[in-house]
Image: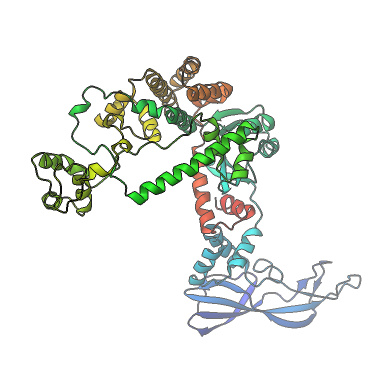
Length: 552
């Protein structure tokens, strides 16, 4: 049989095909002598012979095993403490290895990409079988590659265990590669890492205070660049926080002119059943008791973190309850999306004509393309029925309290949805979204918040990689007037956001004038999440570090 690859330092004597999936290659080493590993003296005196059976790269679709005849020599140096030694093909095999160097390299490369269990399954099909423990052992035995000293880096946090433990990822922005994974996201750890790399000139980061302090301690001469995406996200989050407190007031605004011309639509959610209403009332009572307890503990001087741990609540919930002067009850639900929405106008017209037979109306709209069942049509008609039904039951609108329904003029998107609309440019909104924004901007504070949000969004988007230096400097020059105006806008959340920008002004101005960002770090974090899921969350920091760094 012809062997399509060379085997260094050895001479092939025979190829045995034991079965269709296994080939044994008999060989012996070239040369008639070998050198003692201690005294380096050559010897030709053979003591004995034995065979080694290491696995090698597969040949075609068959697993390959080498049968190497190994000689043991006498050491002829009387002053050497070693009496015998074994010749070893150093290029092919490591001492006492059960696989060749090239097979081990192929296996750890598969392990770097697929992990332990996934790599073991793939290697079995590739005729290079190895257990998952062996694959992981090969990966952990690899030395970390030497990389050139980075100059521009990006840092961001990643979740080892979401909500419990976090680490830091460091990316070389010039080479587009992960440099290191740090065990936590504290300023001390980051500062120590930066101190060992004095060539770093730019650090792109999010707006976390720990990273800002760590960079200031570890690389005080480096330029810190705040990430533009985080600036936009923080602006939207500030608007959303303000809306959570102002949403009830905005719902009470009178309808804007022209809103009556909108097509008919459902103005409230479908009514809930009596068991659902009872469960909701019970839930409100329970959360009201939790709210009272949080307020009592906070008035007693306990910290937010201590309250959260003692009561088993999320810190965000404790923070919200501690800051609320009255219980933040859930607002009535508006109408959610339904298959019936496109047919509401037709149903309203037919009910106005006197047709209140739900099954008849369902058959009519089914011919018009309605794909749902008759249940939603029954619920829609029951709320608008004017005549008693034959069974003698009362119409639906007499049994459901109308006080639980939101007024037609108070329908607004949620705080999160509305915040997204308020930060968008006016020209980017469709007719329905523009009508909602116009309705909200009847409130003077909301109008001021929306204007500030749009100006800041435009200011950030006017800079970046694809913008000129002149545009970036112009955006940076507009930052100070924006901060001054935002602090006096009357919305505490926006004023707090502006104060935070002022405290991190140097990094924010650099974000508006420099092309660097944390985008590469975010992309590498997505890849890190995939590797974590491949490992079922059981991979340690050392394994994740090698799979992220050595893969590139």
